[in-house]
Image 1: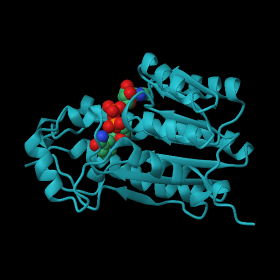
Image 2: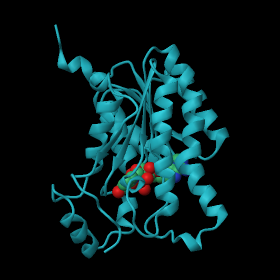
Image 3: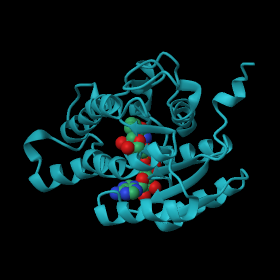
Length: 259
Ligand SMILES: NC(=O)c1ccc[n+]([C@@H]2O[C@H](COP(=O)([O-])OP(=O)(O)OC[C@H]3O[C@@H](n4cnc5c(N)ncnc54)[C@H](O)[C@@H]3O)[C@@H](O)[C@H]2O)c1
């Protein structure tokens, strides 16, 4: 008999979420925990990672905070080692940690060091961590990778060239990974519009919000849970015949950082 709950019940599965200390990563870790997954909350900030793990344990699952800078290969290797030691398997990877942009990247002002730093964070870390996790997903007979991209990967606005191009590369990487890693592992990405997190708060003004809402059919900015629900959809068997897709979650519009 078809039971809808079997399609989002993640009990017994293990998920790693990067950047899980705040915002979209935190909401995603908690959403996967609510669906029954044991979660590894990885973040640059150990205290924030631990706090997310404490909240996740309140959902009745195993959860652990791990300090991990995704731009360090050594720390990523340690993350996978610790996950296997504590949880025994890896089934779901949410590549969420990322940053840059903020409308502060005028093409003519970019240094090579800055470009490299943002590409390390938004793109190269995903190659490294995914490669480390894939053999364990195959061994565990269930694998879903969810990459957190951005609407800026598809837009043309001022001062976003490094962030936007790194996320565009992530979209294309998602598609190529899905081909190489099928049929064992599904790989999808989410392109969020403006989501009310600390990262957005650092650049959002009331005027800018008004402008964003003008271009948003659903007339509100996104909440971290809006992305987390899509993470749950893509991580779980609800989306079992979906791979290689970039799903825009953006209230139906484009929220630009320019007035
Ligand atoms: N908020 C938005 O409007 C928005 C829109 C589009 C895409 N995104 C993407 O969503 C993702 C999460 O963004 P957010 O808004 O939730 O950010 P946030 O600033 O609220 O949280 C980011 C978390 O990631 C952690 N982090 C930062 N660098 C890290 C690193 N090198 N290694 C490990 N952890 C690190 C931070 O400590 C923090 O806990 C990013 O990839 C971002 O590009 C956000």
